[in-house]
Image (cartoon, rainbow, N blue to C red; front, side, top):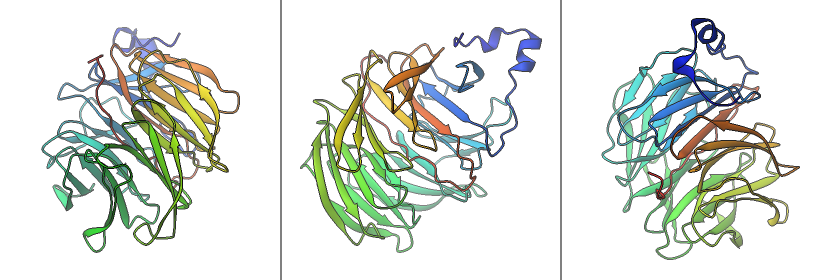
Length: 344
C-alpha cells in the first residue's frame, strides 16, 4: 500500500479512485517531483488517486487555493492552474510572463488573485479571471522565496544576493529592505498567520526571526538568530497556531522549534536525502514533508514520529501542498523554492 499504480488500475479501481468532490472538511494533499508528475494523495491511506503528467518543466512549488477548487503549479517559466476536482490532465489557466524559474506562488484569501516570484528577479500579481500579469515588481537579484503578509497589502521577498525586501502592493513600490547576513542567499521566508513574526532562512543554515508590527514595512524588531543547520535550509515555516517553527534542510533532517522561546524542541529524522518542502495541517499538529529520497512523510509533531509514508514518485519530490482547513477563507501556506541537489 502507498505505491501509486494509477495508470494501470482496472476500470473499477479507477472509478473508486476518482477524487471526491472537495468539501470544507476534505483534505487536499499533493506533491510534485523531478519525475515531471503532480500526485494527489489520500492523506490517511497513503494511496495516490490522481497523477498529472507535466512535461513542460520541473515544478518548483504547489499551492492549493483556500476553497480547495484549484491547484497552482510553479514551473519554468510558466504557472499552470489545475482543477482539483477532475481528472483532466490539462490546466484550466496558464499564466505566462516570467522568463525563468518561478520559485514561489500563493493565493489571496479570496482566491481571486495569485502572486508569484521568480529567478527572473521579479514578483508578479495575477488575476484568475484575466490574462497577463496585473502588477510587476522588480528586484535586483533572482528571487528565491516570497511570502504574502496576512494584511494582503505587502509581499516580502528574499533573493540570491541576501536581500529581504518588502513591497507595498498598493503603492507599487519597495517600502523596506533588510540584509540579514551579507550576500548569503535568502532561501525561505515565513510570516506568522497572526502577523506577529517573520522568519528568513539562508543557505548557511541560519534563521533570522523578527517581531512585526501590524505593517511589515513599518517595523522589524530583531528577536533571534538561530544556527539551525550546518548547510542549506530549504524551507522554514511557522505552524498556523504559532506553537512551532520548522526548518527543512539539505542535511536530511527537519527541526522543530518552540516559538515561545525559540528553542529546539525536537529533530524529525527519517528522510535519507535533502528535505525540500513541508506543510502543516490546519491545527498545527501534523506536518507533511517531501524529499530527494522520492517520498513524502506525515509526522505527528508532538510525538516526533512518522505516521504515514507516501511513495510512488520516481525522482526527488521537491514540493508539497496541503489544505485541510475547515474554513474556506483560511490563509494558504506561503511557498518557496530551493537549490537542486544531485538527484536531478
